[in-house]
Amino acid sequence: MPELTVNAIAHGGEAVGRIDGKAHFVAGAIPGERVTIEILKEKSRWARGRLVDVLDASPDRIDPPCPAYPVCGGCTWQHASYERQLEWKRETVVGQLAHLGGLTDVEVRPTIAPGPQYAYRNRMDFSVANGRPALHEHRSDRLVELGGCPLLRPELAKRFAALGDLTGTTKIVLRSGVNTGDILIMLEGRIPAQAKEWNASVVAQSRQGIRVVHGRPWFEEEIDGVRFRVPANAFFQVNTTGAEELVRLVTEAAAVTGDDVLLDGYAGVGLFAATVGRSAGRVVTIDTGKAAFEAVTGNLEQVVPGRYRSLLGPFERVAATAKERWSVAIVDPPRSGLGSNGVAAVTRTGPRTIVLISCDPASLARDASLLSDSGYRVDSVQPVDLFPQTYHIETVTRFVLG
Image: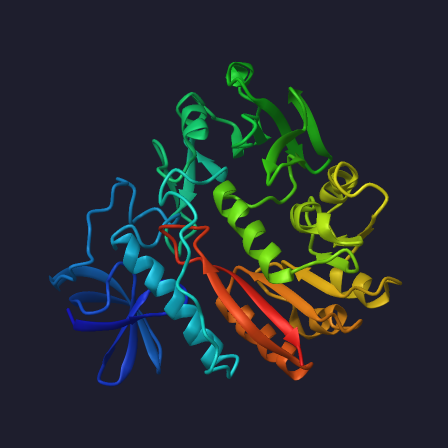
């Protein structure tokens, strides 16, 4: 089996080294280590291998606490110290901004760790295999049955342990309002008889929509003094402590005043509109999700009554034709980023400040390049670790006009 000396972490979380000049990617290794690998896939310019043995271990290597690691694909970095994980995330952002965005003179701040490195997820989506919650293997369609998950918030870990036999159920989603105590469980497929004993709201999702089995079809969460209603199938940040940190960072970066019209693009249930937007003269939200759109009005009415307008539809189309002229914009697009149409839409009214929340450094780099072409410069880049033990990175980037 070939030996590989690892020298970096690639975007996507795998370690990378070179053999005879060809890049070899392998999960579970750490830069500085010498390892043996089994080649799983080989192309003309790169190869992917499976870690077989660590010949020279890094001082940052630790024993993963989860017995399902590394077979389960839910985590990628449990084998490395948390301090090193934070460094890798910053380095990835720096590298992608330079490589894809052509931005080499941008200062990227050290990664913020807003909360615990385990027991942080207020939402987990599981498939079901042999009556048990399961996640996919790394880079595979195969399912791994789980006896628990160390990423779950304690209140969700308690519900997980009490689920019982889920035979006939195909998917199960556990959600919690960390600051309110609300628990919601969403199911697809058969509804287990024991669902009434879970001490949670339970809903069934199908092609026909959401049906209440027990309780109500939403939960509530409180962030920065604002109580949000979150429908069962609506997006909300999966790390509550991280969401609180995002609100703090975005508030600081947006620097909204009473003279501003604030745009919250890809608004969801209005996390930023209802918190950062309290200081604005007027707030405009845009989101394509019907469930979130129905909830955002109530969430905003309690904090900015009469000073908001909520619009439903694809951001690129709606923002391009909206009658409002925003002076500050907050955009939190999906992993694919804004793209050229999104950048054209958000810059249409010439806002003095754009705050971009990104969950992918590659799309951040592409969007930063497009925004630069539109007359905006990067003022600050702040990585935030909303997803410890994984390679996923959240960033808050402030762009200013001129």
